[in-house]
Image 1 (tube, one colour):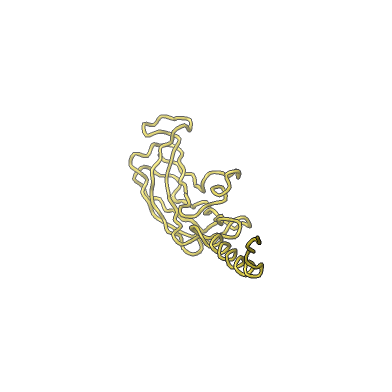
Image 2 (spheres, rainbow, N blue to C red; image 1 turned 90 degrees about the horizontal axis):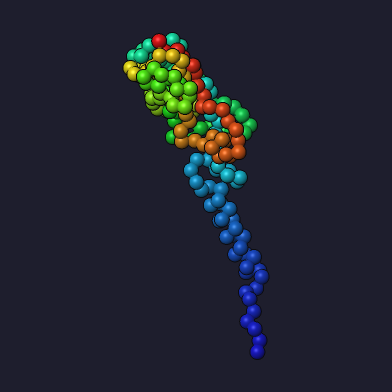
Length: 168
């Protein structure tokens, strides 16, 4: 008895490259944000904000300006559509005026900004009425775009971009 023969090699070779190409295209173009052949693109973090005035009391207005994002080889400075900056204020002093040595922060969200095509954004916000006196920081959190530290947990990165102010 003779055994059945498998389909001829030329037919298999013609079918396989098409399948491999389709798999490669799906792998490269799937996911959210920009994806390259090696995985998701890391986006550069925004530059430190410039905040004026730097000495305030609760209820005062602060002008926050971010002049764009960093320019580095390891990350893309072209933020994806939908990327935003979350602006917050925090202090190492709790809401009752007690220093907690950094284990707990007073923290409040101030605004969400939509950066322009260059990553620049600005806003005027109000210092919360219950903000404790003492040093505080205005922090910028990039939302909707993964940074290098978020993509590669082995990376060691500093805090989000920030500016220091004094609350009286």
